[in-house]
Length: 266
View 1 (spheres, rainbow, N blue to C red):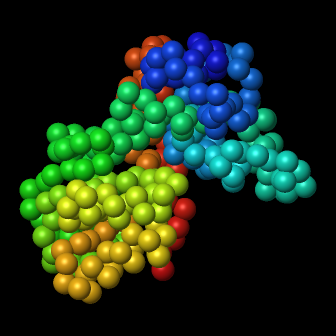
View 2 (tube, helix red, strand yellow):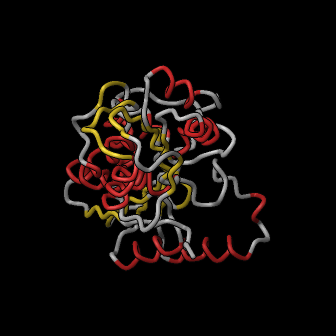
View 3 (cartoon, rainbow, N blue to C red):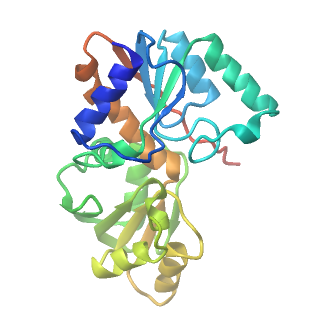
C-alpha cells in the first residue's frame, strides 16, 4: 500500500464517506505516493519515536498529536529554529511519512481514543452512556487511583478529594476533553447532572473542575478527581489502533510505540 491509500482506508473505516472541510488530520511530512514498508502508531511523533520507527524499518508514523509544537503543525515560525531543523533532517533523511490522525479518530463511529482507553483499563462493559459516564463496583478514590496507575504504567498520579471517599459513578474526559471542549463549565455540569462521584481527567485547569471538586471536598461532599495528564489518557487509544489497523493494511507491519510521559518526577 501507498501512504495515501493507508490514510484513505483509515478515514473511510472511521467515518465512512464523511469528510471534514477543515481538519488537522494532514500529512505533516513525506510523500503520499510513497510505498509503505511499515507503520508505527503513537500518541506523538517525538524524536525517540522517530528513531524507534527507523529501527523497526517503518516509514510511516501515525500520530495523534502534533509533530511541530502547535495544534495545527504550523511551522513558519520555526524557520530559524535549530531544533526544528534537526528534527526535520532526521525525518527527511530516513524518508518517514508522518500523518496526523486526530479529528477523524474522535469522530469515528465510536471515539477510538476512548475505545482504546477502556480496553486498556478493562472497562469495556461499564459504560452507561455517551463514552463519559461509567458505573463500577464500589472502591475508594485511592483504590481507583492505584488501579489506574497499574493499568496505565504510571509511577505517580494526582488526585483531588478525600482518598477514602467511595466511588461508583465515574465520569471520564480524556485528553483535552476535561478542559470543557470550548465550555469551561461543561465538566462541572456533567459531574452535577450525572451525580458523579469522581471524574477521571486528561488535562486540567486549576480554577475550573479542580477548584469545583476541591471546594466540594471542603464542604464534606462526596466528590473526587483523578488527573492522568493528556499523554497517559490518550496513548492507549493509539496502542489499540495497532490492533484494529493491522487487518485493514494486511501484509504491512503495524507497530505501536509508546511516546511516554514527557515529565520526570523528582
